[in-house]
Length: 379
Image (cartoon, rainbow, N blue to C red; front, side, top):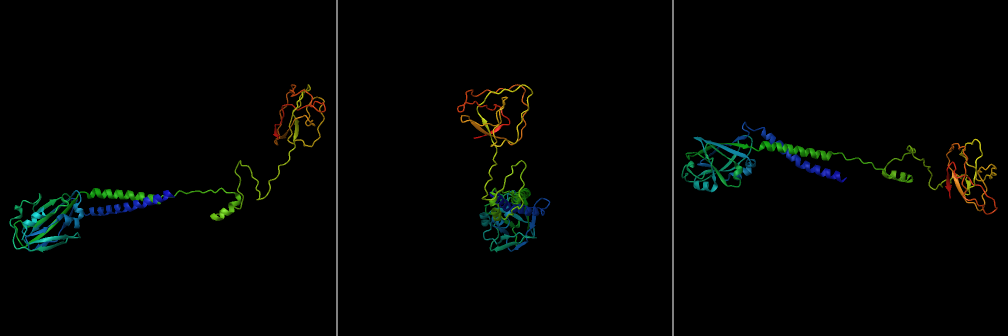
């Protein structure tokens, strides 16, 4: 159960992370379909007209951060191309304080916004009043950053993050009124590798999340071992059906007698016993062919009268023990067993004691040491 909960939580987290990555990779892939032959993006700005000497964006980094943050990414270059009614325009990038000192008292247009849209990008500009013209031509100033010049300006915005730089577009001869047409070209070198990475990583996370959420739970088999009398009650609690037919016994199992509660166990059947004396006497077999000895499956009744002793010296099956005799009771095994024929050689039994038993003065014979079938002693 705990593993299942962990899988669900991990799968949900991976899905929450993988889906946005996959979506971002898809958006970048769609954006790549609009690249030009050089692998960049080109867009024209709406024409800017005004009665001033320059078009100024006092903080380019702040403007890009607000309107086009992707242009400030690593390995990204931005190139601007501008022209006026008289030909290519001058484009310069310089610290804002130097530009403010150069255009002090000069009328110009202040750019506050450039929106990303389909078609020409809208530009919002406000006029800044002034009464004088520039003190010198823009190309004669020394505070411009490398790359500034007539017609085209190219730089890497990520190299100047946090710097307050001003972008200035003027007529090279500082003439007015001013009409400027600007075209921007963005070259993101990171978009290809980033798109592939997002798509691959997002796909892997989503697949792992789906596998974690859809992994089948392990089936469990619950076995209840209960007494037979409690089966109906437990089955009713679990909503199971109680089998009406008896369960077949397995192969090799011992059958068990079923009894109702309170029924007494049947008494064991009384088995006849045979008294065997412990005192042994010598016995010799008569010459001649030996008769095969056999054991009967049906023992003699316990109350049978003892047979008289055999004059030839054979051992009787039963006898009447005296008060000094030691008696051992044994039960014959129930399986019928046939004994092998006894050898024709005479068999002699070593007596345990040759002294006469106390009592009537008679010496009583005892059976030989070898008995067949084996007897189970009962004490």
